[in-house]
Image (cartoon, rainbow over all chains, first blue to last red; front, side, top):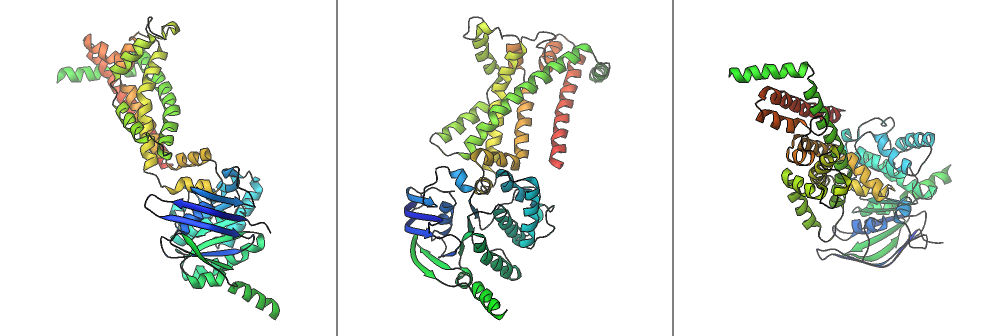
Length: 232
Length: 228
């Protein structure tokens, strides 16, 4: 199966002496990947490269087996939700409309998707709320809804649960675990190894800018689903 | 004190009697200033955005140059453009000297660095995540910059207001390139200078009051937009 994203011989050096170097990394479609590692190990930098927001000095970043000829076109299929996401001024709905308008989705479909997505992230009726009035957790969820509403092929999340309280955490993880069913490949960075074990079908460990380990683990959510299916 | 009070009363009387001379000067000022600020916005906003969002060699030098251009003396701009537009000058064949077009050109030169600098400051002070967020949601660089402009619209409005303030209040360019011709190139500021030198203090004062009223109206408009 052609990887949704593959990285070969990538090198990116920052002015401050940091060097990210990945020899080979393939991401298969419809999988969840957990990116773990200490602070400053290069997780966010790698996610930014995957999102085509930073360009490496060397190496190849291929999507669907080929290097993107047009970065804007490719960015329509890949999206990054940062650790502290920025919501545009205006309402929650206006934030969600943004990506849909860029993709020229029909008006009625835009409204339908926004309503559905807000209910999925547990923010029903938030359409007309002003972005500046939201709490940290709500901002995170709106940013996730804004990214998911246009159905990206690859969803990149930089420490997505850092601002989420424990009540919302479970719902968030359950939502994340469902995304591969809809063909979305997810890469999320986290410091929480138990979370990566709960969600990550593959654990990517990064240290000092190098990918040091790849471990496969089965998602607890998958196990729960299987168990409930067997019980049913 | 009596002289000032009498002049003030007489100035207010001129405004409310819709004195033809006052009307012509106000119209010429508003017309030339509006055209020049529109042109300055067209040039200055993209320039400020470009300098604020791109990293390239010589950027610092360009910013220093822009800061210097902000302090351009109006008579120097007037002098240089006079040289260009005068009959012996390279653009003399266009016959622009002593026309409103020449004034608009000069005022555009004055206002563009101000608009560009204010926009650059607004971009530099804006949240760094705005552009990345727009890009990662699928925007082109131009669409992302448009979104950035929306987010910093008050800074952009302040840029336009500052540029407008500069051109509506200047005398040098209007005098040197317009020639202070009654009915065509006589603005509020050149009329104030001329009439006061002729001893028509009340007339000058009436135009001064209108000039202040225009500044007040522009600021009220800005406040109205900010509150929306």
